[in-house]
Amino acid sequence: MQLLRIYEEGGESHFEELGVAFRPKVFAPPAPALEVSDPYEARQVLFVRIPADWPAEWHPSPRRQIWCGLRGVVRVTASDGETRIIPAGTPLLMEDKTGKGHATVAIGGEPAMGAMVQLE
Image 1 (cartoon, rainbow, N blue to C red):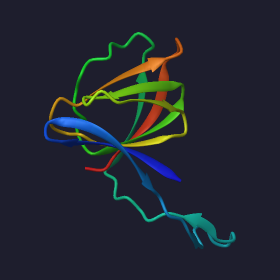
Image 2 (cartoon, one colour):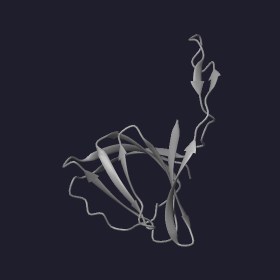
Image 3 (cartoon, rainbow, N blue to C red):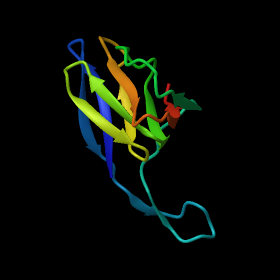
Image 4 (tube, helix red, strand yellow):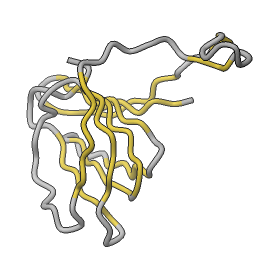
């Protein structure tokens, strides 16, 4: 699986893709083993709704967090100019807490909904 990451370097945000490794693990006994990744420590989970008309203004991520889209599609533009279309089901690790940040907009005329897993 690929985990999309947005991070800050030199005041600009950039994208990169990280591989996520899975290993067999008995996760929910007595059920058979599942393929499980290494854990991420998390502080809280929020559900976020991005309205279809929400303005795409530049902002850094308020904290290190993972967006897990549940419905809809978002377009995220890093301050270096690269744009990614992120459909529901594609996790985005947001680590650009400083600098210009990124701009996010729901596309397709529909709101986007997701779970925001805050890691700090």
